[in-house]
Image (tube, rainbow, N blue to C red):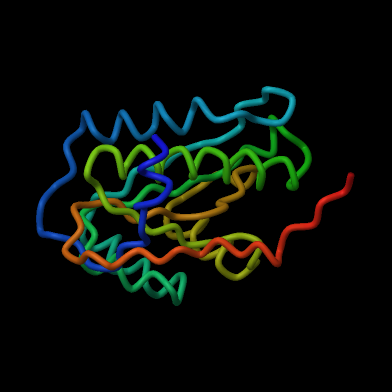
Length: 166
């Protein structure tokens, strides 16, 4: 899966083609294989395929313009009833999302990760729009679909950001 690390991109335009159920299940299986703090597995996943809901999402989070062409989105939330610490939820959901993004690249799907939390306005908007329980903390939404764009990959390795402590 190293190739996916180097070739994965944030996709902002998608083909008008549905994502197969089997591929979505693969993404969620990958997400659920991510490590979680104290093995709580507190994440919750909400699959959005409704065109109107995807279009409306752009009003809930200003950086989700790609939802206008994405055939699918996955809201990744953490259940506060299971894990009492929001910091753990952020870590758990982020690890799950990264597994999803890499798996999507392996399945020839494009994705774009858009943060919801910690912005309280966005949290409330998503909770209301998708009828999420109060104890669920929506961390991010991930657009999923077949890429209608391909960008040249750049090497973003920055050795100046590394400190060695020997």
